[in-house]
Image (cartoon, rainbow, N blue to C red; front, top):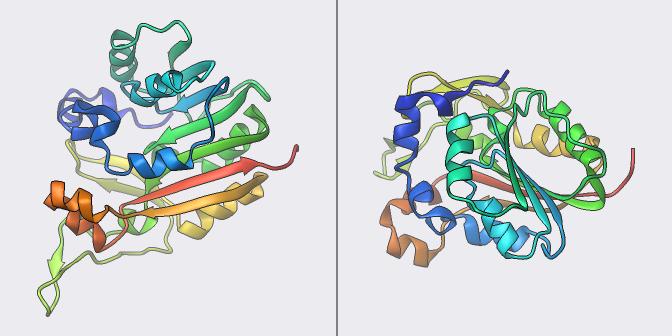
Length: 246
C-alpha cells in the first residue's frame, strides 16, 4: 500500500493552506499549460487519479464530460471532495493506485495531477491505465520533475555569481526519496525522465506532448516567488495517447 501521508493531520493541515487548495485550479500556475494539453471533454468518460479536493473533476464536468470517477487514497481528500460536490455524474472513491484495477476500455481520458511520483510500481500503473482506456484515449498527467526530485536538499545554495542554484544528487539512482514537507519522511519515488517516458512507450502509449513547466513573465510579475522555478524545472507535464490495443 502507498504511504497515506494526506491523512496525517499535520500534513493535511499544512497542505490545505497551499494556494492551489485554497483557490483551486486558478491557484496552480501550471494549470493553463495542462488545460492546453487536454482533449475536448464533451461526452467523455474521465478517471481522475489522485483527485484530491475534486477541483479538476468538477471542472471537467463543467466542460461537458459525461462522467468523472475521482479516486484518492486519502479519506480526508475524498470527504472534502464529496462535501464540495453536488453532481451525481461525479463518483468519488478511495483507492490505492498501487493496486487499483479499472475496467477495460471504460474511459476516454485518464487524468492525474502530482500523484504518480507517490507510486512505486509505475510500470504496473501505466499498463493498467492503457487497458482502461479506449483506443485513441488519452492519459494526461503531471509529476514532480525528475530533476527537482533529485535535488540534494530543498534549499538553494548560491554559486560564485550569487545566483540561486539547486544541486542535483544521484539523478541516475532511481527509487525511494524522502523529504520533509509539512511532515517528516514524506515518501516519493524518483525515476529519470528517460525511464518515465520509456515506461509509457513500452505500455503502448504514443507521446503527444511533453512540457517542462516554467512560469510565464506575467505569472512572475503577479507572484515574484515563482521566479526561482526558472532555475530548474519543478514539474513535468505529459500527454500520451493509446495508439494500439494489447
